[in-house]
Length: 123
Image (cartoon, rainbow, N blue to C red; front, side, top):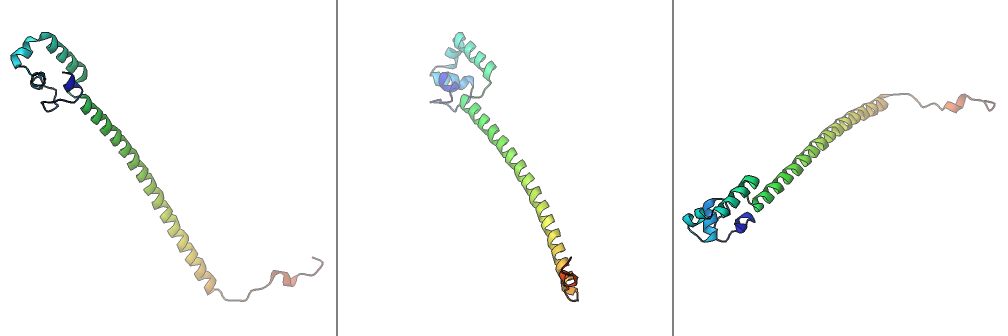
């Protein structure tokens, strides 16, 4: 029973069944059924822990943890993509404004007048 519970069977497929229990023990089904103490322990273990082995429980816990991490990374990627999209929109708008200003400056005619040319020394 211990080998099945610990997830390291030697003669069966790691499933928590009575068939695997008697095969791991190397006894017949009838002998197993007569060992009421062992059967009571087996039933009590399954009632408390279910049919999953320690290895399966560990694997399931690891899968759950990886799924949690994947969900967090997916949310982070979504947030970063939204920031990137917003930044691209702002950059596009700034580029458009910059081009409009350049066109405005290029189309202006006239001469540059110094601000200080009309001042006197007493100002």
